[in-house]
Amino acid sequence: MTIYCDESGGLNAGAMTFAAVMLTPQTAADIHGRFRSVTGLRGELKGSRISLVERAYLLELFDRAGGRAWVAIAKRDTLAQNPGGTLPSDLSLYAALLDLAIGRWLPETGGVCTDVVIDDGRYDPAILGRVRADIQAGLGGWGSASLADSHRSDGVQIADVVANSLFNIATGSPRAHRIQRIVEPMLESKAIRVAELATID
Image 1: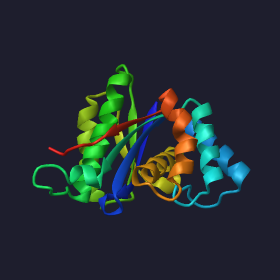
Image 2: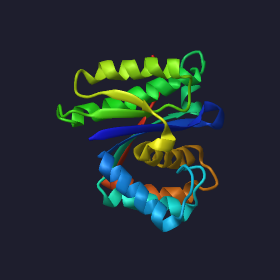
Image 3: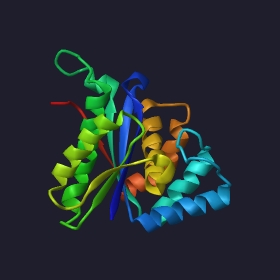
Image 4: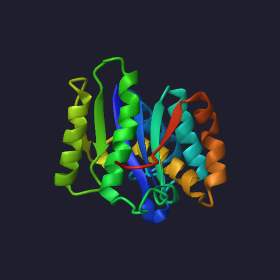
């Protein structure tokens, strides 16, 4: 199995979410291909650019295919309550959320080789390379960690939609109520699980 990772938002927007989606590469390609063939989507699949109906369809395909996700969430108001009230940097928050989401997955893999694919679009490649190396060390020989251009990764684009969906809910966006209705069955079935980050060491 492969864990595909992407993030959405930032503390300046009220919250950052990080989705770690587990799918086989073939299943990710099948979901993405079916979505494109039905919707006629051109260009990259981005949660911030699709309609509510398209989002519901993509997540339904994900759910029906047996997709699962851990989504780590950090809210600005929660972190601001920490001693000193100093908010973390964007990069340290990103790394902490990635650690939290992948950390929730590793005990569930049962030692089966798992590859982690991280979107390379948010930060300088050298910085992301260090993040990748940390994750690689944490895998302890269970798999490999790599960076991917989201344009070329079916799984990362699916992870983007999952992360963006939980970002909308976390920030109470105008679409939050409708998106909550879309993801509620997956939250109830634990196809999508949420871990909230309360503090950064």
